[in-house]
Structure formats: structure tokens, C-alpha cells
Picture 1: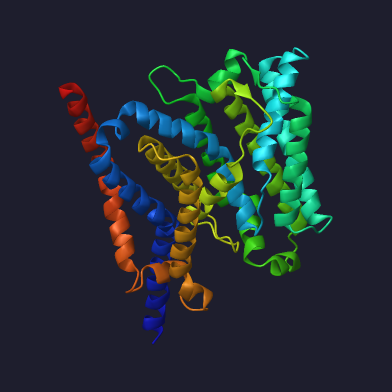
Picture 2: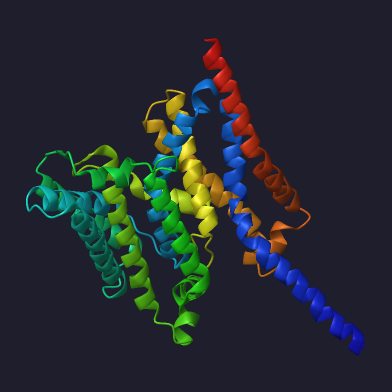
Amino acid sequence: MSELNSNLPESTNSSSSWQQKIDPYLAIVGPLAMIAMILMFMAIVEPARFFRLSNLNIILLEAALYMPMAMAMTFVITQRGIDLSIGSVAALTGILMAYAIKQFGIPAWMAVILAISMGGMFGLINGLVVTKFRVPDLIGTLAMDLVYRGFALVLAKGLVLARFPDLITDIGRGRLPGFLPIPVLIGLATFLVGAILLRKSWFGRYSIAIGSNPESAEMTGISVDRYKVYAYVLMGAMAGLAGVMLTGKLNAIQATSAPYFNLHVIAAVVVGGTSLFGGRAYMLGSLAGVLLLSMMINALVTLRIEFFWQSVASGVVIILSVAFYTWLQKKDRDGGKSFIDSALSTDNKKIFKLACVLAGVILAMWIFGLMFATSTTGSG
């Protein structure tokens, strides 16, 4: 009997260890499947235009703009929060940076720091509204969205502020010689920092604990309100950085800029597997979600579909993603198996196997599409 008991924990620990290693990668099952479907469809309908290297660069530049905000939104949502003001914050910080450079002659690098700092301050205001005034985050951040957009309209007075120093345009669309675009590097760097914070810091661990059960987290000594404010400050700062990147990308900024940032970012995080009910966050999944939505919008543009259908497509993706992860987590919510056990159950393990196959063929499909596009262009 003792021999049996000594062997049982080892087997259980081995299985648990394997599950913990593979669990984060399940978050990209949905995005990978959708990316594969887009690639298959575009390979049939419009391979010559979609699979060009120049188009890949466009997709990456579009995704880079949302990467910092998606990283921060992952923390906000995993704490059972939401921030609907990030588009207005991005526009307002961009306008403040523009005035600092053009009206007051502040150096570009200092104006960038100012924009990010002001974004953090706006995030602090959002956090205080939610935690101190006890306004529900949905209502509070929506109201602050109106406030920040109003200030942007007052400051800009209907003008389009344009023509900025090279540092600003480099942040928005520059490229290192023979390397990735600078905004892509910035976006990936923010995700790397976010992954470290999520898995290796008290902030990440407390965020998951707060999202899982705020009352229990409070009873264990975690200052729930403080860490919620931290998440909103981070969100505001990353929205400020996105404002700088947007200004540099367009070499212009106006009060009505970034109207759909909140929809796009929330969609990317939800698609990536972070639970809207809190307590579960996947930084790699959020990155995959950003890439998916950028590729989807690029495909719609390539197919010459009207701009307004992009919002319809984003809404459909959100619904499908939430339904997909709700299905995977059903047994976990019912008090049965864990997420990984549910995902690898008899009913769901085929999905995981399919995702592994999709991850391997996506790169090959893109290379094949690129070769086909090159030969089509050459023959034409």
C-alpha cells in the first residue's frame, strides 16, 4: 500500500506538470484556427495581393498599434474590469504631444514621455473612479471616454495637427535596416514585459487572484483596489503610447482619431482566451488575437469590402470566441475538471490536435501563397 501511495503522487505531479506547461498554449487554439481559415480563403480568392511581403508588412504595422493596449487590457479584464476610454485617451495624448512640440517647442523625446505619462494619469483617474467612487467600470470608463474625447475636441478645435519630427514618425512607421518595423518591435517588447509581469510578478499573480474571487483575495490581505488602480494606470500609459504610435504612423492627429480602439483591443484579448469573467489571462493568446484581427481587417480591405463591415466582422469574431472558450470551460464552471482536463477530454481533444496541425501548416501556407503570388505577378 505504501508503495502504491508513493507512486501515485509522482504520476499525478508528472501529469499536473505537463498540463501546466501546455495550458497557456491552448489559448491560441481559436486564433490559430481562424487565421488558418482566412489564409485558406484568401489563397483561393485573392492570393496575388494578400500573400505579398508588402502586405505582410502592412498587417504587422496594423497589429503593432494595438499590441501595447492589448497587453494592458489583459490585466484589466483578468481582474474582471473593462476600459472603454482607451480610444479617447490615445487621441487626447496625441493632441497633447502635438501641442507640446508645436506650441511650446518641447523636444520630441520629452513630448513622447509626456504623452505616455499623461495617459498613465488618465488611467489613474479611471481607476479612482472605479475603486473610490464605486462606479461600475463599464459606466465609469464610458463616461470618462466622453470626458477625454470632449477635452480633445476643445483642444484641437477641429484642426488636424500634422508634420512631426522624425522621432515621432519612426515610432509610428519606421524600420531598422534589414529588420522588423520599429512599431512591431515596440509592440512585441510590451508583450514580453506583460508576459513577465503576468507570470513572474506579484502584480500578475494578484490580478489573477482578484479576478478569480475578489472577496477571497481581500480576505488574504491583497489590496484589491490598489491593484485595480495599477491595472488602469498601465492601461492608460499603453493607450498613451498607442497615441504616439498612431500620430507617428499617420504623421497627423485629430480629436476624432481612434474611434474603434476599445472594440478592437477588447476583441483581441477575448479572442486570445482571457476570460471576461476574470481569473484567467493568456498573454500569448492576446498577441495571437491582435494578429488575427489585423489579418481579418486586411483581408476585408483586400477584398474591397466596405469599411463598416469590419465592425460587423469584429463583433462576430467576439461572439464566436466567447462561445468557443465557454464551451471549453463548461466542465470547469460546473465544478468538474480543470480547463486543461476539459480541453483534453474525449469531446475536446480533437480540437487541440487540430490546433497543433494548424500551427505547423500556417507558415507553409503563407510561403506557398507568396510563391504563387510571385509567379502570378511575374507572368502578368
